[in-house]
Length: 286
Image (tube, rainbow, N blue to C red; front, top):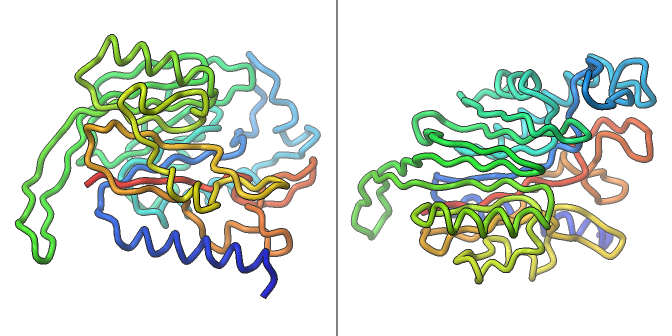
């Protein structure tokens, strides 16, 4: 077996094993690699992602990307899925409608130069958003998370409980630090979960822990560079939360069998029809 195939096999095995061992309440984050609709925008230039544009982004390709995205979300079977790289609410609505799971969604326009936004898919019986704040390259969502009652062999049953959490979704590392700093001052009682790009943020300084530290240390990652796998996106969880370690969500169909990299939608301007250049990441709350 080649080193490339062995790397993918190990990533698939380790991810599957950790997912099976986890409780139900999980949160995922996924960069969708520029999921535009096919309609020209009025306030920013998305010409490339139109039927007559450089990338020939048409209805067939759009619908395929929606189906692929929904299939991955359904495979993860997690009650909260944060998405980066959606153009507008219509795109989010199409994703939610294509999912077999009964997801509600929250979308906010960020007024970014490229039109990319955040969105959150969630099960309405487990999470209830109460407050949100969009900003430049970030979205903050605060709400009540319900943990169902659990029974574990050899342990006393755990009753259902609720807690207030604040999701900080960031696509810019410099933004993450000041957003978290301000939230700690303004909303000190909220348990924060920071997902996305946050390399400029020192987790320990803000009462957070890196849920993906261990898989990153073992060489796993959600994007592939020439130097190897890189855990570019992270999930930082409040130390007041009871958590299980996170990981990368890897399935064989997400990879290019020739290169061993996540199969992108486009590569150097050529349509590949893949799911995206970045793999989803996830972690569980206990």
